[in-house]
Length: 549
Image (cartoon, rainbow, N blue to C red; front, side, top):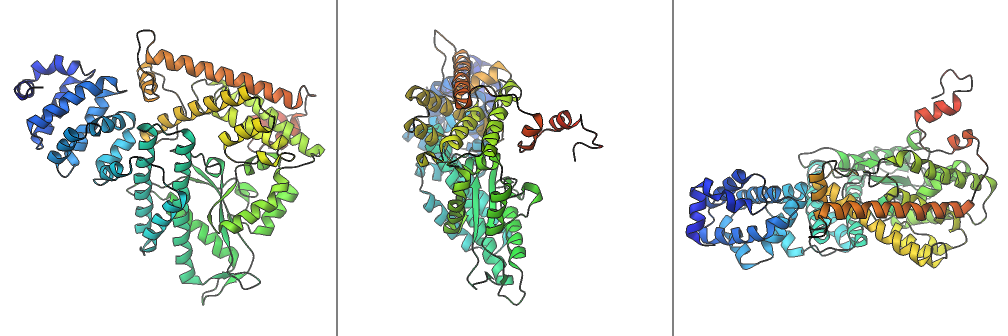
């Protein structure tokens, strides 16, 4: 556009209304003020005119043009040299459109770019390319090794997570990388941060209390096992991380202020958790869930090897076997962690099912089916709704438990890998595999777009049509003469979840077919987390004073 025309619009806001309205903005007054601030900040009018031409082309295509322009305004106000950034936008015709795409997709990522002056340059250098797990670990651990204080380490962990999350999201949003690449990168990042926290915490504690040694006087090993989505290498942007800590053997440290190993590793675990979870000006690195450890919340924070093996051999239940389908040594001594998992594998994957095993698997099947009829009633919930993410994951894990004893090739913690392997093992047809893979990737991408907006652990689709339309555009839908983006997305979402449920119902029915009605007490005992109303309903017919005990 001509500089004189831009000057006229900037000087006379009333004349700019129609011009800015064509950009699909809701608040043209705020947009005009933003352009005026950019001019005052030091962007020459010729470069601002070039930016306006790009804005006129790009904003109408975005999910939220107002949000994109507002974040651009904030970004320009904080960069060291507004003239330099405007020159870059003129020279690199991808620079501004890419930024606008991020600015309209995630307020969380926008805030990171605004508050970290170096983040944008790093983002342009990496272009969202995947990074190997060991490279991330080596880079972060080297940085942390040079630090001496806990607060400095916390800051380093959180800053590293922010910058690497920007890189991963760039690959996801801008480069359209496949789900398995994105989730693996998010998981590698978590591995690196947990490993760095472990190394710093252990080194600090050993300087104070000495090296923990076992009965053979060798250095006692310690492992961090990743469970859940982290264990499967398929973590979300805003997931908790499920961990189990494990140490090798009883003994004591060799320092002047000696500690028993059990106390040393309990303190180590608490120090690691503090480094990961404590709120700082940069927030927390992760929320940590330890409830999958032996005996859950009633058990020690860090069991030793033999006590853990004994617990699972004597008291382990089917839902715990299901959880260990996804277990992986993520930090600490990887060989030790893998040794433990190797010894546990025959318990997880039973080659010959006892009556108790069959009862447990049937109870798991009924829990899945009960969830579908009750908890899955909220169709807006991408995770727990009918035909949602949890339906697919639980059914796939159910099939792995059922067949993994005879078919070792099914033993993987990753859902997409498991779907492919189940087809190879004859447990899924080629058509079922293709549908479940595509629909699972669709649902996980939807989940990611919801969580990236504000870095919240949410799974609910928006209630307003305006926000739902914005989500549809962030998912890659666009308005066409035949169908608006909103209608296309909602139709796809409904079709995919309904089809998922049909396939999963069929798979569960074929696994055992019709069965006798179970005693409710059996399912209560085998339920890992029964609701209070379930407990009261089953045990209320007995003369207990307090059924919840």
